[in-house]
Length: 443
Image 1 (cartoon, one colour):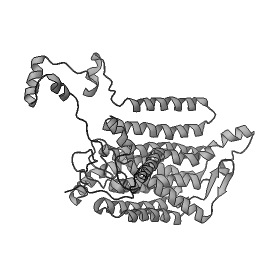
Image 2 (tube, helix red, strand yellow; image 1 turned 180 degrees about the vertical axis):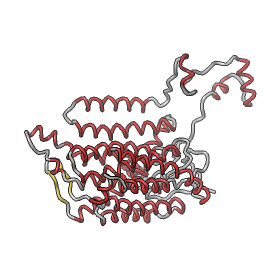
Image 3 (tube, rainbow, N blue to C red; image 1 turned 90 degrees about the vertical axis):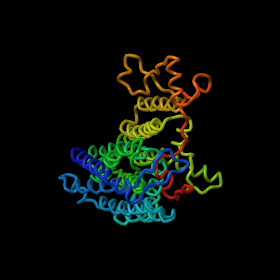
Image 4 (cartoon, rainbow, N blue to C red; image 1 turned 45 degrees about the horizontal axis):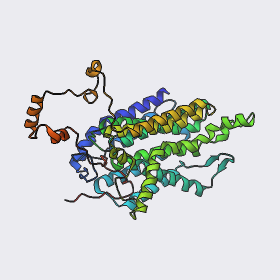
């Protein structure tokens, strides 16, 4: 565990320290998206944040290769090298797209080639544990097609949620934390060395996201761009492929005892089928809804619009930060709910807790304009937005209105006290553009 934590910290530190210089490089190189009608940010913001994230990935793998225990992962498995090869290719395509906005089909082809490179080096799905059937061995063609499909879907699902500051990096960080806990349990509790690469990938992915988030939280100073969103999507898919298709469920020796006990004991075998889906549950749902919505309107499935889940949160009145936190909440609930259920599937308290938390999440969705106010004695300890407004004397209101050049009193004065709504949009540089081209603003 200490070596995994060290790898995570080194990855986060390298990513964090390199993001600042990368931001300056992006400004000099002109890798700054134009302000579009669907954007929320007021000033052009540089992208290419994926450069820092890629070097953080390289640093994490390099450190792990020189540690006593994690070095065994590189000696016994070729998966880390396969990940680095595919990540380098997808990162290069993302960098070119952030700068020159390459064609959609070229990006899709690059994603498939990157997945193929990983398959050629051994990172592929060999078998699947199917409930009620058991372990089903896949032919090479079946494993290759399933691996490529999972990589492409995950990359584009992650990219689809890269629409608000800190949203994609935060959601992937939460998902990778749950995935790390699951993979570490399989590796440590059951003694299955084949789960070690997936555990390492999850730790490095957490470090990449944690190192980039301080620069990307609202208001973002830099966007990760396609070079970052496609990269973390590929790393996330690589971990899911490794733990699902490389770990033999029969090695766990869980099929013993009564039929009822066997059903509960084999839950960790079948969770790999569900956990990769829970990791991208929110992005995948957004992806499916976007394809259906655009196809229904007669548009291209890859045409950018303002109908994503985070856009709808802004439309109903949530602030930028609150919309991001709500998406974090649902991602954590789905990922950690599946993780907890894999540990103890027989406990009804787990199901009850998930139901209660889901009700709380729905309540948050239905109260977009609710802003709690702190009591008078606690106002000095909370941010200004949680303090009660002080009522000014009438003379002070008149002076303030005259200073702003507005009439004092009446309905017009009351209307000025309300906040002007901000146009709904996406503050990211590449929302819904992993495969589709970006629309240029009219000059």
